[in-house]
Image (cartoon, rainbow, N blue to C red; front, side, top):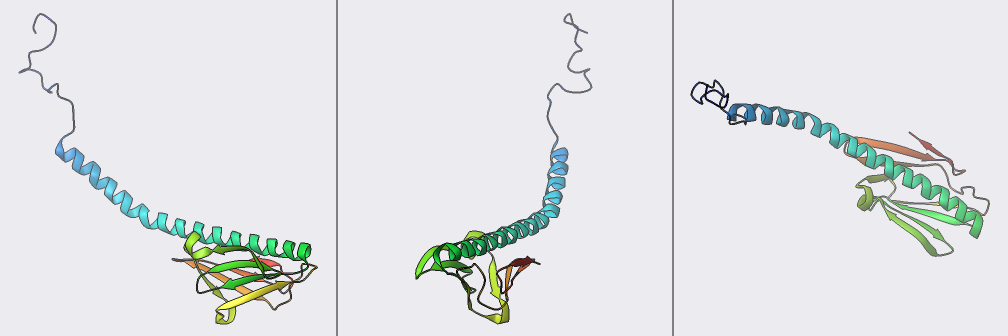
Length: 157
């Protein structure tokens, strides 16, 4: 021991340089890579589910708004176009709002009986004037269906 109470550097079993060895860093990075590889597909599926859920809630909200506009203005139509996944509320030849589900949520929209377009008309009492319509929203493996009854009620499946 020297006069300051520490061991000489050549007798110290562990050098004073603190840090990690290359092997320790390689092990940590390997474990991180395995963890990311396991979690990435799960995160992607969750992101798809959330996008489909958000799009479905937006469609339901637009259906309710269309019914309210029909009562307020004496009739309204919810126009659905499956190719572009767009939805518009039309009232007295005026487009009140348009939503592009593909751009906003990245979802595909299919209509029942493989229709390219559908118009859900609501009368002045807010009741539907068409037959039932199924709207299917998809992104990746996530999918949901909205069944709109002829009276305008929505069932989520």
